[in-house]
Image (cartoon, rainbow, N blue to C red; front, side, top):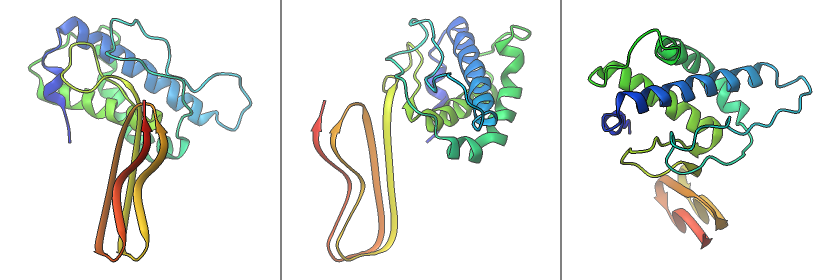
Length: 179
């Protein structure tokens, strides 16, 4: 569900910093995806960011290159849409719903690529950090199915199961420990 309204609580300066972060991160992600077959020592972790920009903390994680490939055209288009704001050539208008929707869409794409939520300081949404998303979409469950089955979870977890018929057990999330 899109959350561009959560961005309206940010000051124009905070939103501009958020756009700069997303724009730079998108460039890095796309460059690493294009160079993924070349040997390089760069980490897949999100680039360092002023801690006053994000609520919570992004942790080092592997990029989901399959997801980058699926979203490459959209990420490129959204970064292009936000480039003038990121580079300071245009001022952010918090009332511009199309701009807020583009910022939110780019953020959501990067969240999928990094497997982490990205929340700007001051937003009314869960903090930045690891996010586990699991989804099982099946016709029939005869035994057991889970969207996410984990022993220990450090971060947010979302699980979902969709089934036409269940003759067993279906659960969105099964967790032994949450830290």
